[in-house]
Image (cartoon, rainbow, N blue to C red):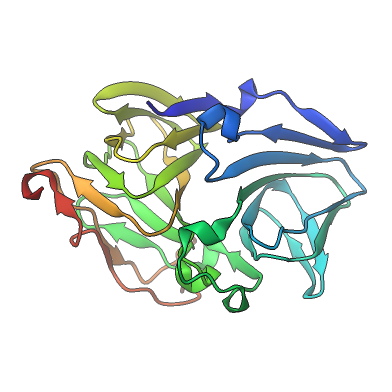
Amino acid sequence: MPVIFNEGEIQKECIREGVFVQRLITPERVKSDYISTERLHLDPKIEIDFSVEKDSLAWFHVISGSVLLNGEFGEKELNRDYFVLLPPSLKARVSSDEGALLFKATVPRAYRFDKYWETSEMDIRFVDWTKEPVLNSEFDERRRIYMLTPQLSGTKAAKGEMIIYPPGTKAANHHHEGAEHFQVILKGSATFYVDDIPHSVRAGDTIYIYDNERHYFINDGEEELSFIEYFVPGVYKTVWAEGANICTWSPSGLNIKGGKPSREVKAHSSAEAHSIKEL
C-alpha cells in the first residue's frame, strides 16, 4: 500500500536557533531507506551547513523566499525557479537574509542504485526549471518538464520530473518494476488510484509508491494539478494496463513561460515498456 501524508500533519522540529525541519519521507514512515526528504524553514539572517556525504546524492528547490548557496563553486542566489543538484562530497552552506522554505531530498548510499557509479562525473548543477523545455502529451493537455536526469546528475541512481495536469486530464493505469518513487504535489487536488483504490490528494501531500503498485491520477478538481515525481533508482520498467495509452510526450519548443527553452530535448516515450498483455 502507498504511504500518503500531508506536510501540514508533520510537526516542525527546531534543530538549532532559527532553523526548523519537517521530516517527510523517513525510513520509519515508509519502511524503506531509498530516499529521505524534508522541508527546512530558515528564519531571516540564518546560515546552515548544506554539505553532502561522500556516498550520497541530494537535491533541493526553494519553495518560498530566496537563499544564497556558497561553496568552492562560488556563490549562487536562488529563488523558487531553481532546482539544484548537490553531488557527493559537496561542501556548501546556505543562508537567507529574509528567511526561506526549502525542500531537500537525499539518496543515501546512492552507489547501490548505479553499478557505474563514478563521482568524478558528478558536479553541482543549477537548473532554472522555468527555462527548461516543456514536453506535451500526445493524448491530452498534460505537460512534462525534466528536473533530474542522468545527463544532469552523471548517475542513474535517481530520476525526476515535473508533470502538470489541467482539469479533466488523467494518466493511464500503470506500474513500475525495479524502482520506488514518490510525488510531491505542489498545486491543486486530484483523485489518485492505487491498485484501483481511490485516494483524495491535495497540495502539500507526499505520495510514496512501492515497486509494482498500479497507479494513476485523475485531475477531477477545478484547478491545475502539478507535482514533482522522483524515482530511485532512475532505471526501471514501466508496465501499462491492457488497452492503456502508452504515455508519449513531444517537445513543444517552448518553456513554461512560453519563451525559447534553454536547451532542446527529444520526444519521450514509454513505448519500450511492456503492456500487461505482453507479460
